[in-house]
Image (cartoon, rainbow, N blue to C red; front, side):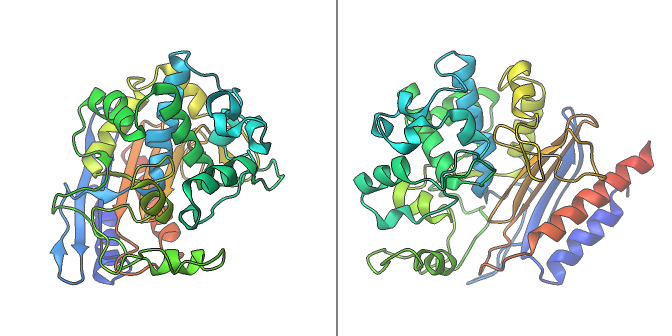
Length: 354
């Protein structure tokens, strides 16, 4: 078996309880090389086995696969420009500090807008005021979930459609993926995330009173794990909320690399390095995440729930790794080593074939 070492590693990850379960897909823009499931989609209150079609909360993979693509499609259609200021498309930002920031800065996380805030402790009006007026004053890369919530609002304002409806019509239905959508997902074949929202609540406590929030006290399954997306935007936002499975995500990446979701010139713009420095950012993507293992053209993104989507155009490689690492509780720092090992083993295996 070509992928025997990878198979053994992922088996160990689940049997030794580093993660409850996972699905891994490896291939290129034409075919599947490896596709296997491991462990459990849920372990409490009952054990449910993982399968290759299991749907996952993609978390921040929403950013490149939905939000950034939607924005770039609108640029392609000449509805907006990359250097448009936010105030041009969102009236709440007129004459406000962040109104001068650009779509480009939001996409590459250099707008200075803070990384995170529990927006659900604010009223809807206060929320927009916070987005429009709060800035760190820094121009370096600050990975901002808030910036991508704003991008989702721009998609809605420009297209005249709800964000989820836009993505469904112009991205997912366009290529025929049926399991990729924003929650609430009612199918039973879905990976569970956290038991309650303890991690989210502990973060939110630092910012104000959270007693009025109707915190979830059950196993989160089919509902977005991310608190801002769930509590503020009913599961539909530019930072998180998208659900999919490995097969669908692989197909999205195959069509994407072939220039069938955005045209090749837009694709080229999205996957180049726009920031330089230690953390290189493309339009929605992180660039060159594994120097020495894969080419410098590699782009990828991860999600807090334990997900990863990666492509190396130079070697025509796609790696999808979907896990339920935050089930039944959040344990920080688990996934970076697992992801790196998967990439390292895959790279070694494929080089041995050459």
